[in-house]
Length: 172
Image 1 (cartoon, rainbow, N blue to C red):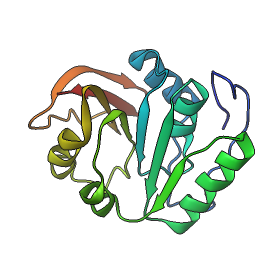
Image 2: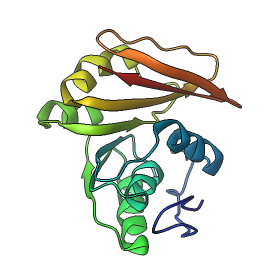
Image 3: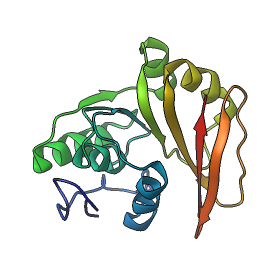
Image 4: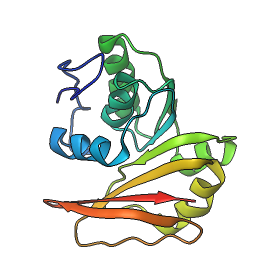
């Protein structure tokens, strides 16, 4: 995998070893940021971070800060290693996503969520996401293309399919 744009464009990053993580492809990441637009100065939360590719892409594109959350220790080590490799700063929380969300105070301009497709109850995330999202913030959820998520308390800005993935952007 590589960083698509920004100050770290072209830098290679690694995914955790094994099959627990499904890294977001370069193509889908590019589509995410084409839909989002500029992220200069943004505060970013990358949930189910895996390799950290989404949050690192945001930092490369000018986001001010990023918090990465994943319960898998190998994923957390991969995010740390990728941040170091790219000479970027971020906070890595190696804990359950729901536990991390419960302790967070919020104010995020951008929340990126690419969860394991078979393990996540998106409706359970919605109230926590709504509480953490800044008033003009965006919540980006990647799901299987066949799923059209709707989340109480959040409005869909757009939803698009890219191969086997669907990207849905929500706002308050």
